[in-house]
Image 1 (cartoon, rainbow, N blue to C red):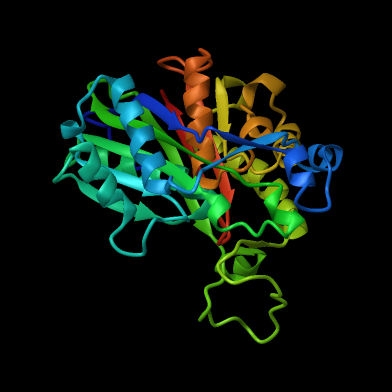
Image 2 (image 1 turned 135 degrees about the vertical axis):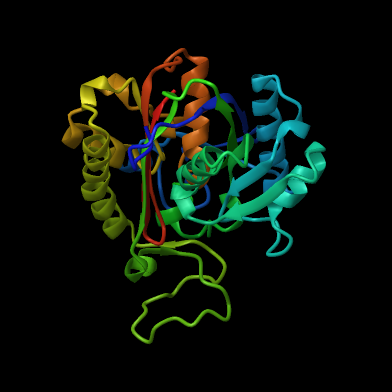
Length: 334
């Protein structure tokens, strides 16, 4: 059923997933050689042990293209089947043209539509909601949804508060119309509070910052008030998850898995405990990849499929919180 109570003529399904991860691994010990930190300090506060970093010849377009090609291969579909590509990223290759358009061209999917979507760490789930809604209109059949980031290009490696957290990578899903109307998004939510923009942002040289702003870092690098982001994420995550389940008439014990943005292991575990989820119902891989912003949820999704944690008919809840602040959920019958 749609949210308005009208039966759907068709359902929506994720028919393929893929990832693209840089070869270079940056360990906590590597970071200890750059800033005043150590493996124990990072692990206790974030749960992160390693993260992937692109080399100088690789950009976000490369990661996005390869992840989506992998998802198409998994779906056994040619790129020409794509009607639209939605690329969630805060590290686009250029301001114009959008990165998605070049991904479409390089995959041989033109003249498919292409858009970049910027919602920080919430980006992939936002994009998944948009894709599902567009397919339900009947005007689009198959959409490629990608989350890709090269955060190493906007991280200040002299700031230990941020450089320990972030990594690079991409994940993608191929979403398409299917005959079974019970499959697809049962309920979605997308929210923002721009009054909290200063908790997580990347200032440009000509940005109009308020007079009382305490920014002292480098322009074009990621700035974060970690304490406030942590508090917001912990209190908001479990609340939005419960609101989504209530709206759909679903109980937490009915979920096969929660696929969440990988922000910080302490945040994830705290939200899981507040929500009352068993340990195995929340997928966590931040220890290996760090926080990859919009890429983290689709990377989790791909790994969960590969490990047999998701099968057709399962209830899966996607959720994410990102800069903006933004927060979002998407409940699916897979």
